[in-house]
Length: 282
Length: 282
Image (tube, rainbow over all chains, first blue to last red; front, top):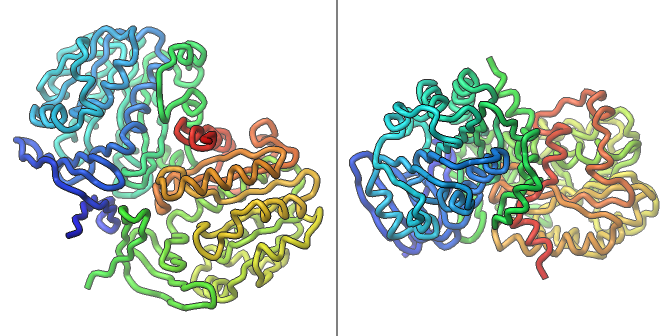
């Protein structure tokens, strides 16, 4: 028997990987969760039928969410991570000794439980004593917070399902309030390539730009995600991601990374002309 | 009826696009050529079953082959393009008034004929008076040349079929001889991500590094190619691709591009750690 899992990149483009076996399949209140073992991509997490992460390339996504702001902000103590049911982003953050507290807000308890059982390459970091998991909607959690975090990372699903609220102006405004005076907001920002997604890239960027003093995008090569060309938002009250990068200080920490380095950090902000045009489109 | 074309990215990963109709299908001496109209990627060229280019993202590949060396070398007059049966690389080169002559070496005459008929978004440039098409093997053509070209661009297929010879040390040595004292060699360099391909990346890079004074790699996001993370080789007798970039001069030419710009040029050379490690692997 041949078993193949297919992720629909657009309605007319499909990405398929050969499956060895299905590890888990659960229907939560909000979403369906599947975990598969694949030949090429190792263990894979699928949410509501859509590929969420793979063991083979999740390091790219998680390193780019965590290390870009950590190389810029000089004293991150308190971090809020919204999403990250798998723990990959947290795994990168606990590499920093100076971080005191990491609040993880994830509405789906089943996802955390399944990740703890089957995605230990990411979720092992949940056992770190500085990590506090809140089973709650990110939108609601952040609403009450004021001047509390140095860094907020929005590690969400696509803006078409339950995560839709994490791409609104209201949410970004609440993140601004929850951040300290020199805080940074990072969010996964979808792909600019397929027109099905590029509108949400433009809209999210505009919403953030009306709220934050500084808003820029950076990119990475994530092979299993639609188009492989993925964007991240860097929104900041004070620090500039290029002028403010602390190259020597970050390298002296000797944080082990497989994708990120401080040269690549600079390069990641150099966007292609068609992406620049998308962002400036009326 | 639903018609889907599938490109096998590895033996366990498939990339499929919905097809509207098959435009042409021919079996040449060396290869099978198919041209398809797809919903998402527009017109698509398939060689021996493998995706070669798509109307939607070929601009990324061709701009990165042509403009990176053109922004570095101060006086490109004579160019040799090996491969480029479609004409996309030539289309980017004819944007430069200072270029006097472009030799295109392509062994498959049918490919050129089909491209002229069906891939005019690329092949229209073949009508430029400076372009001379030689129906010949690239390996053989370059063997007899000495001190003739300012720039050689190897726009080849993958190194597993007929194009294998274009990834050998002998070939790179002959390119070195065919170049003038300050010449540049650019080649498409495959993807570093899947282990099926990464060995050929490492080997090609080593062969080039033994022949040329300077050899570096740069990258681009090409969604339709395996992994979407594509590498290019920049080998040079004299000019450094970063120290030598003529930012102001290139921008003053006002060459229209949709992907390339001089900031991205710098960023493209900042490789991820795992790619650096692959290149340095013993």
